[in-house]
Image (tube, rainbow, N blue to C red; front, side, top):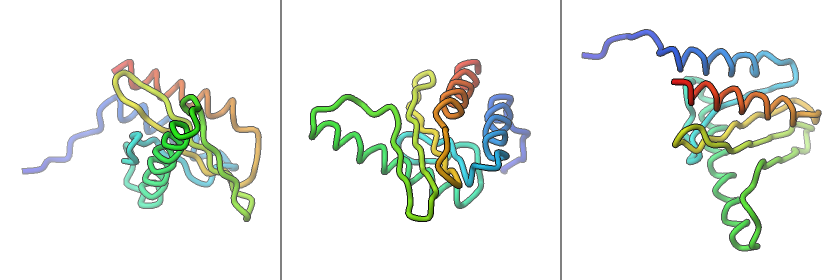
Amino acid sequence: MLTNQPPSPAAQALAQKMAALHNRQDVDIAVLATEDGLAINTDNPAAHKLAAAAGFTLALTRQASVLLGLAESQEITMETTDGRFLVCVPFSAGFSRLVLAVVFRKKRSYKRLLQQTARALQQTLEDF
């Protein structure tokens, strides 16, 4: 029998940090995902699509890096013709490899925001 249990403290903390990112006016959608593209702590279908795209993008850039003899990517960006901007930031938390993927409504200065968010998510995961 399945029971509805309250979210764990870690899940609640992750949800709060992601909600803060989602609530920004310049953010269209954001998701925390595993490196293979599985969304974490969301039931939003669009977030699951973004997570899958982020996992694919991460795998693609890894293959390109190997082919070209480059180091591992710190971030992957894509600007669309309608002015939106996708940024994927891979990072480790404990033994997990994750990716924070965000679609901005317009090109903006995003580096500090994403670095702070990734560090906060990483710290949250390592605290539990």
